[in-house]
Length: 461
Image 1 (spheres, rainbow, N blue to C red):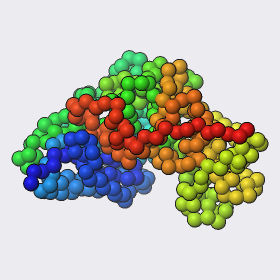
Image 2: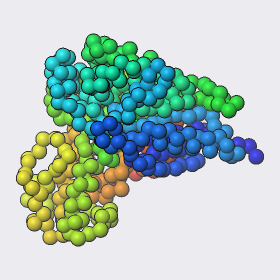
Image 3: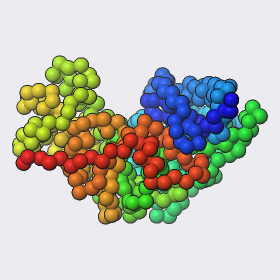
Image 4: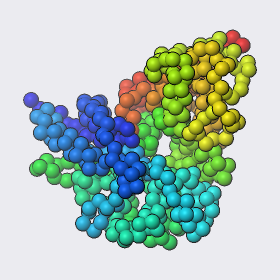
């Protein structure tokens, strides 16, 4: 029996760690999910357990190598961004993998802006809204001034996807998609590291930049395997669309964050863009992708839990709520803000507390919540589109299963061709494609993503 040739992809999210095998036509052969328990850093702040993650990766990799059914040809890694692993001269890990939600000391932030320019200036030049640890370059600045004794020992700082690649190759590199995702490291207009990176001597700790499509051929247990250098997950999720679609499009990637990605807008960001939480991601060729994001999935979960408690429903009840046109039209007649959002910083009318007294049922309050979230979603999509000629909007991720959200999208964007794409492969597929030289055509998304065109609502106004 001949063995099936496969590419392994480790797709590491903050919550779910996924492991995929793809055949040569990018068909999924195996998929496994796990959740690993967190550990804490020296301040007791919860963070990824790097040792547990490494063991899980190694165990799965070895199991596939031992499996008589498969011949491993390549391996790649797609992971969340804004996370650095710091290595000493001998390749030992020096610090915990600091969580990008950890608050950063105000005095260190003040020192940074005092030395290198105002918050707005840095944000505009690096296309990174200023958000502390989420700007991973700032983690290096923070280490330098908060833990100088540790900082002195660093030989290389690798973003998480490149660290996972390093585990297999022993080679330290950097690549565009990880450098370019809200890190504060890259000056987009200069197409080089920002001046502050050189002034602080941080460039010396970053591996040489290689293309995201680069791979390193190694021999492992007498088998020749091509090892990719890793890719940032948002850029990876975008890749199948870029490779198969010629017409300009916007991709709305939904989940914990709702991110509008526009690979066809290369304008420099303005001060107004920064204030609206716009940023740039980077394509695998170093070109910018204009994006705007808000913490939609996070807010949605907080509010839905409150609705379930208030109306005495089991958590999960909301998943079956279908769009109700009469309810929607009634709520739109007296349009107002009823929800106090907790995790969203976009400008909207602030109210002191959520008011649910006006809604008789869970369904009614739920529709109102979706209307208020959709107002912010419209705003962020419009910002990302900017002045580019976009006709197509693709929606992927968790909210494609949300009937109310999808109906509202089709209604508000009826002058666009709006499509839902359902792929549980998300960023894993892009990681598999980036290290293969295979050409794909227009039918690719149809085959892999169960694409559906959304019909605009005909509302009886």
